[in-house]
Length: 79
Image 1 (tube, rainbow, N blue to C red):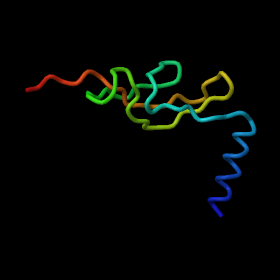
Image 2 (image 1 turned 30 degrees about the horizontal axis):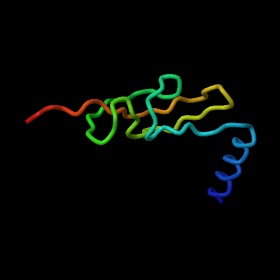
Image 3 (image 1 turned 180 degrees about the horizontal axis):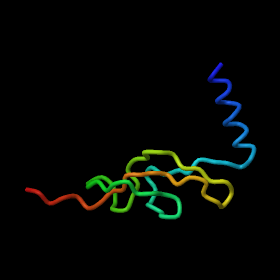
Image 4 (image 1 turned 180 degrees about the vertical axis):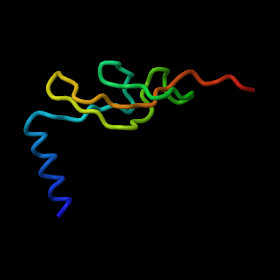
């Protein structure tokens, strides 16, 4: 029921050229992403998207909805 409707809707969007924006692990890009917060990270370079809070979409070169993301910052120096 609902799963089938969702698949048809997703397929229709794909046929229209709507595609998700890949965010996690990529450099922050203000044209594609909306930074919701910064988080210190020792594992990722500053400015790298750590987590996607809300998926973004684009159609060809046009952004329909920006991805809401958490962006890595320098690790804090608390010792």
